[in-house]
Image (cartoon, rainbow, N blue to C red; front, side, top):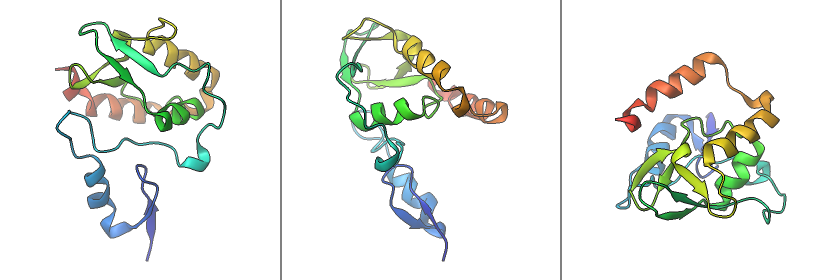
Length: 144
């Protein structure tokens, strides 16, 4: 039997059960967040010291602060294109908001500029045009 590695929990799941398994991770909780978000497997995440990497951001429209989970920070440090939607969850609004609307508490830099800087450092991870268009179309529902 063939299996695939889940991008959420990183367990190996039988291919015939893969979609149903992933759907469980994608369920929306009462606070508006998914049950879990895609991350790199633990062994592929950045192991660098995060002392200088900001982790708490404030949404300019509502003023709420949100802490980005360490596993997401460590994942985007390795592959800054992993999260192509260019949105992040705001705990105050209970929804995903554009990165440009959020600023790191530690540095004052907006999240979009921050991720763009990391992306410029790792162009080898940039997905092809078709993938970027597909992601854009999928995430149009977040814009409305």
